[in-house]
Image (tube, rainbow, N blue to C red; front, side):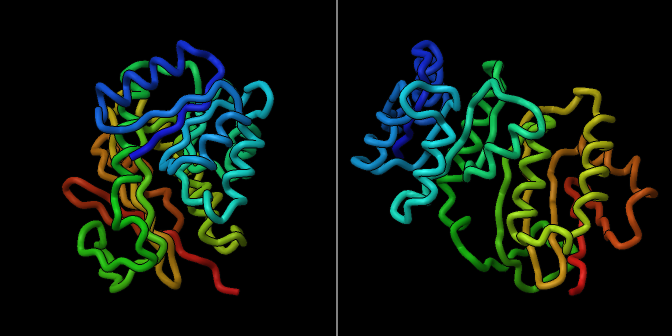
Length: 256
C-alpha cells in the first residue's frame, strides 16, 4: 500500500510518517509533499491508495488538490482524508463537497490519530468494501436479503464524525429530503452529548441500504446505551433493534 502525506509542516509530516511506519504497517510506502502541486505530481506518477492532506498549503491548497484528484477517473479511487485546523459546520461541508472521504480536525492527540489512521488503513485494505452488492448475515437484524451501497465508517466518535456519517447517508441519495435526516441527526447528537466524553475508544459504524431504507449499525456499547436513553423519543417512522453488542437503526426513505 502507498500513502501520500501532503502537509507543509515538516514536523507534522514526520509525525504522521512515524505513526504509519511504526503503529500501522512498516511495509507501507510513504510519499511526502509540502504543497498541493507537488502532491498532484506524485499522485500522477505513482500508485497512491490513501492521500492524507492538509488544506492550507502553498502553491496549491488542499481544496484544489482534492477536486483535481476526484474529478480524474484514473485517480478518483484514492481515499482522501483531510487533516486540518479548519473547523465548523460550513468548513466540514466544504471539505466533503470537494470530494474528501474523511475529515480529521487539528489539533490532534497521538492516540486519536493513531486510532483513526489504523482504521482508515483497515477500511481501504478491505477488498469486500468495493462490492456494490453484499449479502450480510451480521448486523442485519431486519433480515433484509440484499444490502446495497455497503460502507463502513470507522470513527472514534467526535462531533466531526457524526457529520461524516450524515454526509455518507446523504450521498447515497442526493435528494436528501427522501430520508428522515433531520430527526436522525437530532438523535445522534443527543446520544453523543449524553456520553460526556466517556466512550471507550475506536469502534465501527456500518451504512447499508435497501430499496426502502438506510440502515446504520453500531458496535460501541457506550453509544448503544446512550441511544437507549432516547429510544422513546425516536420518531415512529424509525425502527430500532438492539442486540447484546450492537444496534441497528432503520431510517426509512420517503416515497416520491
